Image (cartoon, rainbow, N blue to C red; front, side):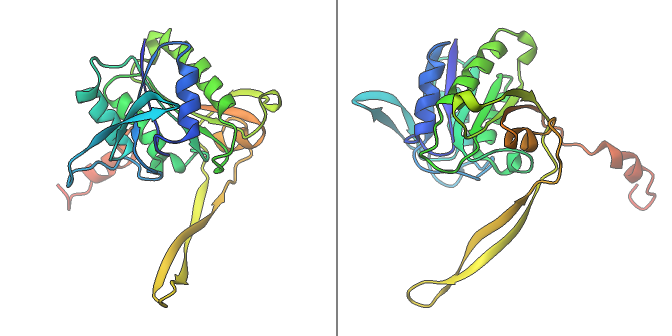
Length: 253
């Protein structure tokens, strides 16, 4: 099995290193990841500048290819040019910070996996519920590998996207896996106004993440209760509820 591994935290991320190492148990791993941090860039593509690549080495051995672009760039370029053949699976992560609910839309991690799904490749995004790069991503890598193995053995998962979020807990304290849906959580955003040493104003993004549902079938609540959240994700762009409304509006037709 050929597995393409990527992320949005950059090719130097320990979460990526642990994930690639774990996935070697079930297939041949090819790492193509951003050369630097690319969190929250969603599906952004590089179109005004050339995409450059370089070989990345870890502990004296070649680890993968660094791309000076976004997570979506990495997957599209890998499939189109860098790999000898289309991979059997795309796995993105391990991301530092949960990618649940509305965060799915902003996440570069999930976007990279979505690019695999869009071309018919079963894909996984995996995140740990901590923004600290010191968080242990080995449990997350193990769960991703377990689920990847099951997906690869089941043809029903062709072209699927599975979003995994893992508690920041020791392996023995994780309660198990819950199959979930994205919650209805929202961000209450604001920008802190600050000044640099030259008294010039600038703004720093901030906000509060508000989770209102206490339902173990939702990703946010399952995660906070100590479960691994596993959510199948599918893109559906049309709003069927408004099609008939617009068709019946005589001013529009």
